[in-house]
Image (cartoon, rainbow, N blue to C red; front, side, top):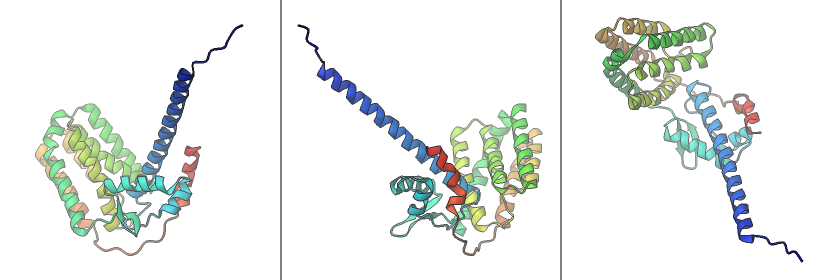
Length: 257
């Protein structure tokens, strides 16, 4: 007589491993959804599709993205950590509105650190860096010509980030990247309706001075660039209409299937 012998302990271990793996896959899928929603909201804020002061109701966003309110709440908390969203007890979330003082301080801080890093930028700059910056300017100019505000904002920020990245200082570059996000909030809050990022010809002039390795002239021009942005701001704004979340984010549902 032959008896079938089952290793119940081993079977249980295998089942536990399968369940654990399935749990990881679910966690990974959830993290991917969170990241898609985070990037979608961040981009909409930076690109002025969701303006400062706009309310971000959990229920409406959960319906649009077809996720739980808990998932939306986690994303909003992440956005609050990078100061793009303000969370108020019993009032919910809204796109942050920098104060006038904060707006000035953001550009003052950018002027201080970006200008101070220019000697390192010039020292490490090579032909491929110049070519990459030139391509960014060309794309930015095209975006302005096509009245593509979102793309113009992206390319404007990318120019400043890539300029500082030439130095090889990753910590400073990360700071500049964060400050460009908050700069976009300031321009959305206080800029003219037509204002989308920086002025292209300023970037072109900065690139010309970088190519000539004129550190002081480059620093002076960048400082004026920031001063001009602040001078163009109007520190008053009216109320904005409720955004159409379905129009902004409805196309992202397919990413969750």
